[in-house]
Structures are given as structure tokens and as C-alpha cells.
Image (cartoon, rainbow, N blue to C red):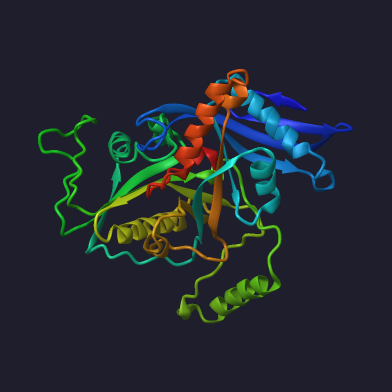
Length: 368
């Protein structure tokens, strides 16, 4: 087994010169939530396990556990405080490995909502809702003011917004509400220009082009799904006036857009989120430079109310309503000679994971 250290660290397990397992990880500094523990505004280093794969013939031989432990050792050598991973609720093998064997703790639950890019645009009530694109400086100021207390909020949010894969940030509000984005006394400099009115309803999202990094493909699909998609295409050719919603071809490699930095405040602001997600879909559909974008993916906290989930366009068949996030303290692994310190750190993480989650969950698009 060998670890290669780049921006993303990759661990590889080999057997007779054949790759039988792989794991990937990254490290970043994040802010934790503004409730105790840990103290408000505390910046900690978190290691992310982005992918763990073991070839089927070599599973149940301890290879996955060995890869994770090797990656944890690399995290510890880089002074990482916590290690995080995410998996679906139905992935029993992964949950058994991380929770039962490696002592990870269930931290939060997310919902992954997937919406295929249709052949017809969504209708947005432009007479009621205003959507505007923000400058990077404006988006950064709003995120720091309203999402800095979000769990796992990245310290380098500006680097994310400036990344070439970030397609932009958009804000929506109701037109009948007075909502000054910029103060009248200033027009160009960032920092003091953003003026959020607590009485207004508004929503904000950013968009990441994940298709430029990797492609997805649907390996196997139920036979009824295949019949359904083919029937729709035939009917659309025969009766184009019906404007049937066609399903993209997910059996060939395709790209997708990832919605991140989703936040909303005020009465009926869930509707504004829905309008933004429809706007993003229409943008992907009309983007002549990126015909390969076949889906829009959005992740929200599992503890968000169902009103938000219902407003975000998605297909239940393609979505995952219970995406488990798990966490583990690595300080006890580093300071195994300091018993009291180990106990205190583990006690802190237990208290923290038992606290009620705040509404919003920030998912770093670089870790998708």
C-alpha cells in the first residue's frame, strides 16, 4: 500500500501488482457551528474521505479498513482535528466499517436531490420574483455574514467562488419587497456594500460545474425504466405538440451541475429557492457550450423542512433522502499518551454531535 501526496491524497492497495483498492482524501480548514462545543468561530482542520473502493473479489479481507487507517495516519501527520465521510443509509457495508469497526459517529443527515436536465424549460414568474447575479465580492460578504455559523463552512470561501469551476452566484427576492443589495452611499467596493434587510425574504445559491472534473454513468437500470424512457422518445417524435418531458441518456457518461451555498431567509423563501433551482436548470438546458450537462444535483440538510424539498425540482427515483455524514476525532489518535486530553476531546465531539443541527448544511463543492 502506498500513499501519494498531492492536493488530493490517494491511497492504493495492490495484490500481485494489481490494484485492488483505492481511497482518496483531502484536508481543509473550516468553521464549526456557533453552538457549543466547540467554541463559536473556532477554525479546525478537517480531513475528508472522498472515495473508498475495493474490488469485489477482495472485499471482506480488511483492505478497506487498512486503507482508511493509512489515510487517517496521513491526516494525523498533518495535524487534522476531525475526519469526515458520507455514505447512503442503505450502504450497510460502509456503515458497518466506519461506525462499528473504525468508531466513527453519525454526525448529520443530508438529502441529495437530483433533477434531470429536461428538454423544456421551467416557467418562472418573473413578474413576482427577481433573480440577479452577484459579484464574487458580494457573494463572499453575504456568505460570511449569513452562513459563517453553518457547520463545516470553509474558511477559504473566496477561493471557492473564484474557482473557474464556479459558474456564479445568484440571489432571488420578491419584487414587491424593498431589498437594497448595495447601499446608496457606496457603489463598487466590497465589504460594506451588502445590506441585508431582516424583514425581506430572499434566497441565494451558487453553481459548480462538476462535469469538468469527472463524468457519471448509470450502470444498471430496472427494465421498466428503460421501457419508460424509450417510450417517451417515440411518443415525443409522433406527438411533438404534447411537449413531453424526455429523460436524458444516463447510460452514457454525462456531466452535472452541483448547487452549493444554498441559503434562504424570510417568509415563503422556499419558493425563491425553487425559482433559483429552476433558473439553474434552464441555464444548463440553454448552455450551448455544455451539452453534456444532464443533471442538477442539490444537497440540503436532512433536518430541513419538507417545504424546501418540495420546492426544489427533483426526481425521487434518482435522489437520496438519507445521506449519512459521519465524523471521528483524530486528536485521540495523535495524543494516545495523554489520557485526559483524549477523554476531553472525545467528550467534546460527543456533545457536539448530540446538539440539534442548525437548518443549513454547507457542502463544499470541491468534495463532491
